[in-house]
Amino acid sequence: MENRPIGIIGAMTVEVQSLIAQMEDCQTKEIARLLFHRGRLSGVDCVAAKCAPGKVNSAVCAQIMILEYAPRLVINLGVAGGVGVGIGDLVIATELVQHDFDGTALGSPLGELSICRGKEEQEIRMFPADRRAAGILAQEAAGIYGHAHLGVIATGDTFVADPEKNRWLNETFGAKAVEMEGASTAQACTMNGVPFAVLRAISDNANDDSPADFPAFAKECAEKSARLLAKALGRL
Ligand code: SAH
Image 1 (cartoon, helix red, strand yellow):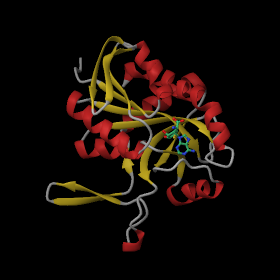
Image 2: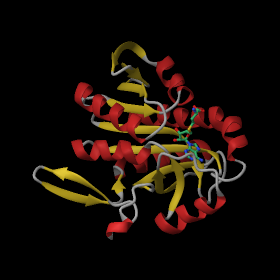
Image 3: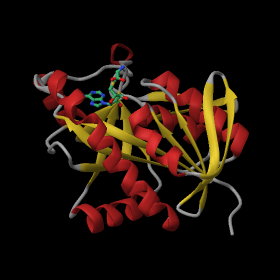
């Protein structure tokens, strides 16, 4: 069997606490004030961490996890704002984009950024998620909850609570969900050549109701995505 763990990253306590609580033979290490929990989940070797919201927090967490634990796959899970999908729905990323990366004044398409390839640089707008992992998560989601959406997830350092911006996210990127960690985790993983997947349950509609919906539904939805991951782990 593969001896490299599956990495699991969530931004908030509610997104990872149930998984960490279920871990067998769990050992915890603190690096950069982040807690990395290594153990077996659903019989699978895993390492899980809470990173706190935002692109920098999630990228730092992913980079440390990759250097310290060499995960064979990194999964970012949790909740997100829905773009044309309902509260409680599951969205599994096919691709991720940083909607707030803006070099348009210099002629770059919105969301396009550069990463280093040694001396060269490579432009990337959409970070492709691991197709196999995304397919397994979608199948398991359909099995447990009836259905799931596969599509683009847009990430930025903004809690989106604006119907105009919601429409714009769909028109500009074809996004189905918006959150604050997926594409930055994707970038860190891509830079290291590590496959990744992003799995989100919709806690709010990224509109005027979000300030009320997010606190009302985040916990329940976070647990929904954690239950799905625990179920899917054995196949990933
Ligand atoms: N300190 C707050 C911060 C939450 S930020 C708290 O802990 O309650 C919102 C988190 O949920 C982020 O991690 C983000 O990935 C996700 N999220 C849910 N709805 C979102 C929305 N409408 N826009 C952006 N991110 C959203």
